[in-house]
Length: 141
Image (tube, rainbow, N blue to C red; front, side, top):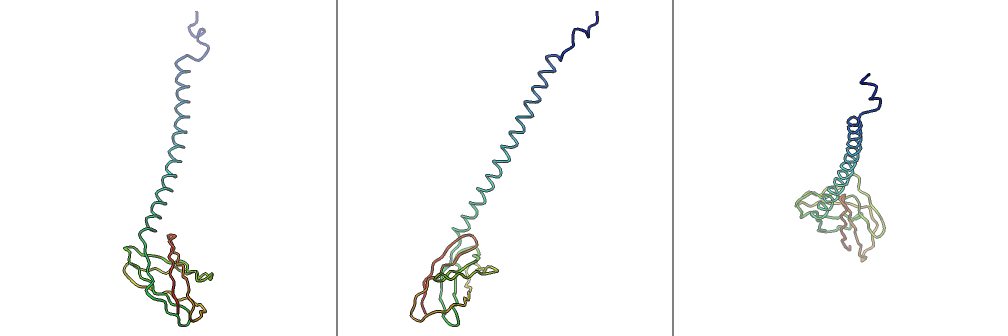
């Protein structure tokens, strides 16, 4: 009698090993996808924390506003990190600063705006920074 004649199908051991391999491969793919998703979510969270930290650490103070041939704002940065100003809004007029004006720590920088002004009027200046900070200053000629 031929010993191979009895074993025409796949043995139980080979079937169990094949099923184990397929299961482990499937679970590895799911685990890698989960790790990739959680890593990208964590990176976004860390970047948001860094942006909030930068916004919290920056500070600007209006030293003076010179109303001659437009308006020149003199801004002081009392914080320990540079502040980059990208935009100034004045009574509905938007002035985009390209490139952004950088105010170094513990220093004063001027920003000149071509603005027609009326003597005796008060103007509100909204200064926006690169990190999303918004500073409101009021000055009059």
